[in-house]
Length: 293
Length: 295
Image 1: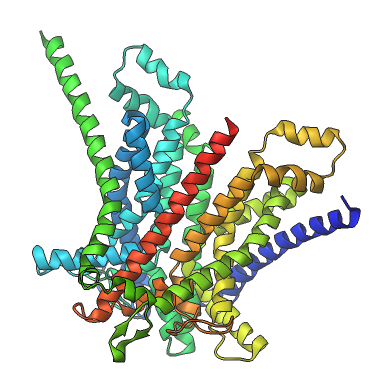
Image 2 (image 1 turned 90 degrees about the vertical axis):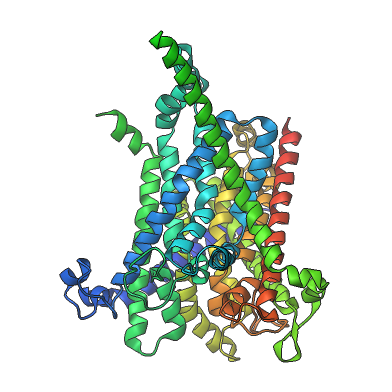
């Protein structure tokens, strides 16, 4: 191979790396540069006393507090729905399913994982319309509908991480308890799941990150620009990513735009922290935390 | 006697939990089917009227009662494929750097950064694109608002690059170590290793990564919605504004439930669903072939 061509290829790949690194630094730097100045209590709570807002005594109308609460509720509800169903499905796929069932189901889960989030949002919306017509007049696109739709969105992640974590256990671990006379279920509950917990938890954290950042699903299923802290599951709500989207298209003055940068920083920090948690756990921290004590 | 009862209880518990796990798995699988079912049921009036295939080829002219989604399909394909075209060389370059060319500190840092990038919310890419990239494009080309296919596909390329890079790195690193050592012992350089061994050995991984990234690009909503301009037209140049299927769903949802305009978004949903399902089937066929090739 020509010596100069070789050098050219090496230089190109270095350039790619530098361009990518530069882009990320630009994106994060741009947000930080414009938004750091706005990070004050006022950004979160507006003119209301923070304590009043936290105790829900007064509604915050010009701060990010309701959006943060909305995102938090959304994450808790949707992951709360997705974890039991997803983990159970993952266990079934790894431990019980025969090859034919496995093939069909894993195809379906792959499809579910690749369905665009806006289509899941559209599904959530039609679900709301359907429930409104056939069950109760009170069901509109709302926090409840959004969390169900988001749960569908992250379900395949949880199923797959559970399944892979279980399947990757060494055969020795798998057989030890069985050899001592444990039943299949006992083996799963007392040995296999605890052993693969770090994989499962990092999957769950990635799912949380997905719920926190997703905008397309909630856009169609009940998020609004101004609703305050939601009072019930069937109420509309605010969320951080939607707030950023809304501000970017509807801002009226510089101050509102700046609050968009502030919101971006908060969302970025939340997602980064979640990412590092997942990363640390994958490195085996849970294993030590749970078994050293 | 109590032991007998206990063991029977135990066996019952065993069977019940197995059924429970099965039910959960069936529910999860059914959701996939249900999503498609709902799209079809709500879009049924269109399909029954025989309008579905017309919709795919007609223009969108609400005043003339034409609700075709052809411009949106063209926009989606244009933006997504351009995004992949931008992202592919960048990803190959970064992946080669990480796994073959540089084994030092920089490659470890780059790998972490790429992993971190997968966690950055899409809306932030859109936000930065809107306030940083769009004005730059406007100044550079001095045409229109800067909200165009070019801006959207550049941002989309940045969004999908990490997916591709991580996938490429994975498949580069699954090339057997003995092959690498063989190159070393023949006195081959790192670049020769890359060009003659690593890339030819992992082409099926590269293809899979490419298709996965294309799926991600097709399904993304926010970047196109925020920075492609959303004009309903078939884009003819890089600086034309365009609307994707995903953005179209987000923009029309507020319309009246019963109108044909509203029904047409289910055609968008069905089209997106079918696109991504086809990509999944394609990816799985690659994986199948590559495994059979190895055995």
